Image (tube, rainbow, N blue to C red; front, side, top):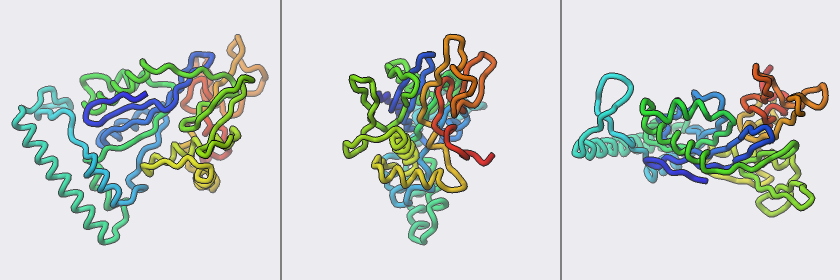
Length: 308
């Protein structure tokens, strides 16, 4: 399910699931200009892994900008305030695009020169961030606030286009129904047999255990930083050990997988013990796991996923 917006902006649903309590968990691949990334990051109820300037070789970053540069989707005319309601006239827009392209040419030359000096990408490639289109994996159960704030004429036009794409995709997609012990695992293929058993497929067609399937899913979510995807079991295990096998854990990529929180008709657990990963209960009596309502988040089941 891919919805295209203005200027190369898009929202693609990777996986869409719903549980018995009607809590919907959705994972998106989003493409948008990096200039709005800081605004995207303010929506803390949604889990994110994003393409990183520090993770991509400088030459590849230059090629990415040259092949797919960002241009404003609305050439607003200068006025007081944060919104530009009126757009430049057609002739001025052509001139503005030409000047913008000149800027792209200049920064790619600057970055290439810094790269020739062996300057590390975490500094050299930063010059490319304004004209860069980036990819972000985003998962959550709580999309209402983002759509309420950003699908609005007061929002940055690029963010409004992104919010519209998300909204349309959510409206169009039909989520898969998952029950207790079934898992929402982005980038992992699953199938249910006649005996209602769930099997997970690796890239070579072999069957994965649930534990390995979780690792493959988290590995693929983490790899958005590299602009490539390796869903092999070898890569998954290697990346898992790098992210959470060390003392200083990097656990954000494990926030995209989840399993339904099962409660009885009274809204309580069948035993007196909270299931592993359930973190809190809100004032409406709903159970949460991190920022997921009604779903156990994979991250919350990993011992020591945070320092405390």
